[in-house]
Length: 89
Image (cartoon, rainbow, N blue to C red; front, side, top):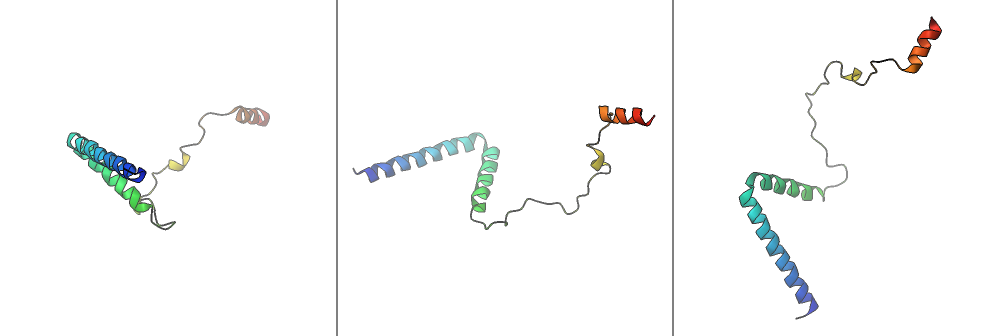
């Protein structure tokens, strides 16, 4: 048997064993495996798309909650603020 033939036999054995493992996992966890298979399929389909063609989902009806822009504001004074207060007094 040639080296090329041995490589094909090894690759075929790997494919068959991966199919068996996938089948066993599908029988044990059908929902999770179906989800992962769908995600994997979609990932491979996006590899051939041109640059800029893939976007994330956007909700056109979304509006930010009221007061969300103040969420990161400071609530306690810093030493610089305290120094400014003392200097102003």
